[in-house]
Amino acid sequence: MFKFLAKIFGSVLESVAEQFVQAVVEQLIDEIAKYLKELTKTLKFFDDEQFES
Image (cartoon, rainbow, N blue to C red; front, side):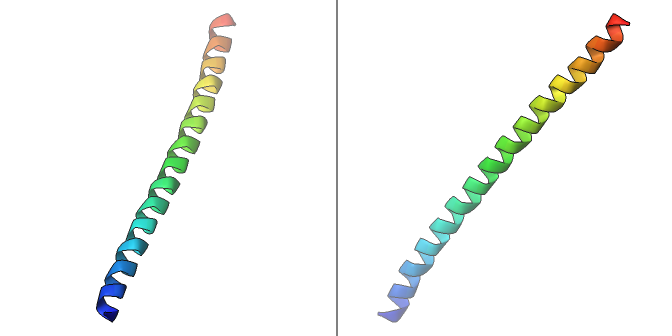
């Protein structure tokens, strides 16, 4: 009985850990995407400034 409960608890814990890791990775990807978008805007701005002068 104890092994059975440990197995259930282990699989639930594993599932929660997978969901947590997935959420963290998704958040990280979102942050990187925002950063790259801002970086692209900045680089485009500097590029446009060079062409104007």
